[in-house]
Structures are given as C-alpha cells and as structure tokens.
Image (tube, rainbow, N blue to C red; front, side, top):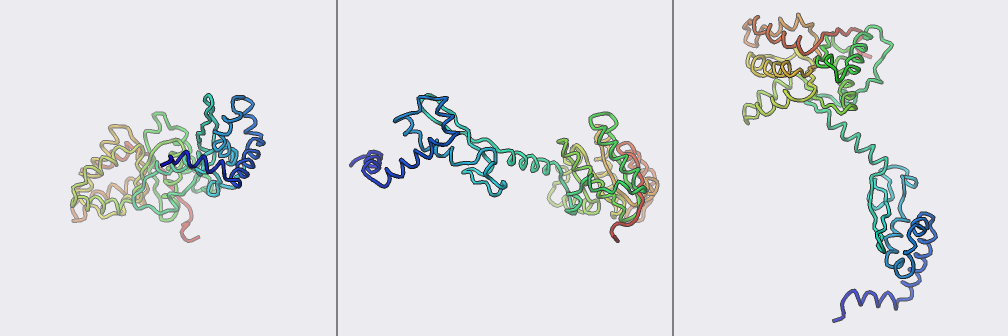
Amino acid sequence: MEPIQASLKKWMKDNESFQKRFQEMKRETISDPEVQAVMEKNPQLSGSVLDRNLMRLFEYKSQSKNCEDCPSLDKCINILKGYTPQVQVEGEDVRLTYDRCYRKVQEDEQKEKQTLIQSLYMPKDVLEASIDNLDHSDLERSNAVREMVQYLQAIGTKQAEKGLYFSGPFGVGKTYFLGAIAKELAERRIGSMLIYMPEFVREMKSSLKDDSVNRKMEEFKKIPVLMLDDIGSESLSAWFRDEILGSILQYRMMERLPVFFTSNYTMDQLEKHLATSNRGETEQLKAGRIMERIKQVSKEVPIFGENRRNI
C-alpha cells in the first residue's frame, strides 16, 4: 500500500483546483508587508523552502497583531484568543510562537488582583468597592477618608502594621470602606480577607463537625490583611471569644499583621459587649484581654454621616 503522505502529495500535485488555490494563497502571503519583512531578513525563504513553510507564513499573515484587527478580547479573531503570533526562523524552518496581547495581559492581571481579595459572606457591591467612588466632599466622613489614604500611603512601613477600626451608626459606609481598601491592597499585590462576623461565628461552629477549625484558623491568622465586618453584632460564646477570636488576634498582634474592623460600637462599648457571653455570664477580664489585642492591631476611626441605605 502506498504511504498516506506520498498519496496526499500526489493528490495535491494532480488536483488542479487545489493547485490554483495554493498559488492564490502563496501570492496573498508573500505580498503581505509583514511576511515580506520576514523574507527580506531571511533570503533562504524561497522556492521549495518557501513552499514548505507557506502554511505557517499564511497563518502568521492571517492573524491580528497587537489587537489591531480585534474590536475586543472576546471578539479576538486569532486562533488562540488573546495571543498574537511571532515569527521565528531557524535555518530553513519557520516557527510560530504566541505571546499574550496587551488586552489579555490586562485581563489576567485583573483576575489575579481579584483572587487577592478573599471574602466570607460579603455582598458583591462591597467586593467591587472603589476609593474613587467614595464621596470625598462629605465632611462628616472626611476624617475616615484621610485615615484610609494615610494607611495606604504607609504600606511597607511600620505604621501599616496597624489597621483601622471604623466605628459608627448604621448605613454610613463602614463596610464599603473595607472593600475600597481591599481593592487598593490588591493593586499593590497584597492579599486580604473580608469576613462578616455573624457568619464567621456560625462558620467556625459548623467547622467543629468536620474538624476543620484549625485549618481555617491558620488561614485567618496568616492572611496579610484581615478584615472583620460588623464585630459586636454576633451572638458571642466564651469559646469563640477566647479560643477563636482571641487566638487569631494574638497571633496577628505578635506577627504585626494588621486587622481592620467595622462596628456599631466604639471600642469602649465593644469591651462591654465582649464581657457578656450568650449565657449571660460577665467576664470583664477576658473581654479586656481581647480589647487590648484589638487596640494593638488597629486604630479607632469614627465615621458619621447620613444613613446611605435610605438614600
């Protein structure tokens, strides 16, 4: 039996319509300015050598370079979406390599930044928060904005080892501040985790069933920036206060890792809340220990203003 390759070559040689199309494709390819530039640099690409490499040169010619023929990444016309071809000539062989286009690079960077912001039961609008969307003209929140900006400017210094404790009434945007800070941290390639405290308590209690408490605690302890939203609104047990929250804050205090908080309580009010367990027991000393750790890892920043949930 005649080998398949030999049969295919014979068919291409004898088939008149194929030959016609092949010659048209050859003319289109070698008349392309970019292909001509390649051929000028590599004069060996002629005759049978050119014919042997024609399909790769045609593939190169037919695709968009630097996104010039693509309206968007989703509508990329190239074989590999988001990748632009580069020609490499090695002797008499033409090879194509593909590099990410600038749109693909931007998309990958954005996805990478999004992975740096982890969350536990946080609303989507908070995860999409931006410092640019904050109302900088609101005088009642100006101090909080200033403290946030100063923290971001201090990243990499000893000052940034301490987070912020945003206290204030409902609806003034405390949680949104956390989201905006998390986004700015991601821009600097710093990971963060935002946690809604009431769900955090339930999450850790349920983790007792599958023995995953220690694993989860290690994540909360070691994330570069931890953010606890609405601390004081949860129904607190002595076990969670001392064994979970206390342990996490102790580790972060020792390792100088910042923690951000939001609360409807001031720090003084929170200490009273922490002193009373869900069984009605009062343990002022243990609450004081927790508050000492909170003060070591954060700075209290009051936020006032109109309830934005009613706007």
